[in-house]
Image (tube, rainbow, N blue to C red; front, side, top):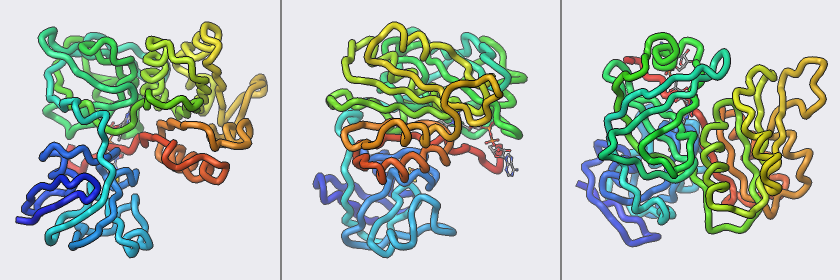
Length: 336
Ligand SMILES: Cc1cc2nc3c(=O)[nH]c(=O)nc-3n(C[C@H](O)[C@H](O)[C@H](O)COP(=O)(O)OP(=O)(O)OC[C@H]3O[C@@H](n4cnc5c(N)ncnc54)[C@H](O)[C@@H]3O)c2cc1C
Ligand code: FES
């Protein structure tokens, strides 16, 4: 057995090194930050001060060889090979939220356009799911490995969960949802998960970047901001391929109803009648904001969009610590 200690907090736990350090830390109630848990997003990165860790197979995408040489590690992918002293900022604000596994029933499936469905899950009345706006759940069905989906409604109704699901070409679970799953089908959910959530104690103006169904958790954040009468300026940018991919008109309504909410739709493949912004959504933001120094940015959607925003916004002044994101990495598993 090895001892893993976080120098930043003095907290420690014991592990046999069979699971990842992140997995064991979470089992022991330490709130280490994480996102995809698949070695992509880099959110679980920590500094190894003392001791040895190892990866099974290739070095994951979320960390570079230089970072490993500098003593960094991806805690969701590495295992302890000795006692380890590491340094990582644990999250305080989600510390009190319990991650639960709960039975739920599909209360409705609404097809919003050609490849997006809005799915409502009803949790039994005796239970509830506490979460922060922006977080996600894993959906559990006996025939499939768990799949991650972000919660699209504000935390005010904790027994009805709204999800926006995109049909993935060749995707097993999303094809099941679109073609076979019925109202009243029984599932389980596990959550809430992730550290992509709205920081309410800040006063900074906010830029929200959504790509496709990345709008779901952004919707949760805006609905929450509206319900708490937040006065900070909110600039929402939603990037989709074509106008037909815009699956909700809510943002236009928010922009009409609230003077602090501003909405820009960005089309990658517009037709000739389109007069608005075109191209990649992060590029539209770079054009509109010469200096991103004072802004807090929340980005959610395809991994390539999240990565491009992170890299280019920093060059235009954004402070790294003011960037929060969820990359919609596929949960694809070979078995199911
Ligand atoms: C934190 C988080 C939050 C998310 N939130 C949302 C959300 O709110 N809304 C949303 O729409 N999505 C979201 N996603 C993405 C979502 O989880 C995936 O789209 C979903 O898991 C796809 O499941 P699937 O079974 O349909 O696809 P899978 O079957 O898992 O397939 C995924 C990909 O792998 C390919 N594939 C399938 N079989 C094979 C094979 N044998 N060999 C090689 N490749 C193969 C498929 O063609 C497809 O491109 C989120 C992801 C994360 C990590
Ligand atoms: S790389 Fe570890 S949580 Fe994403």
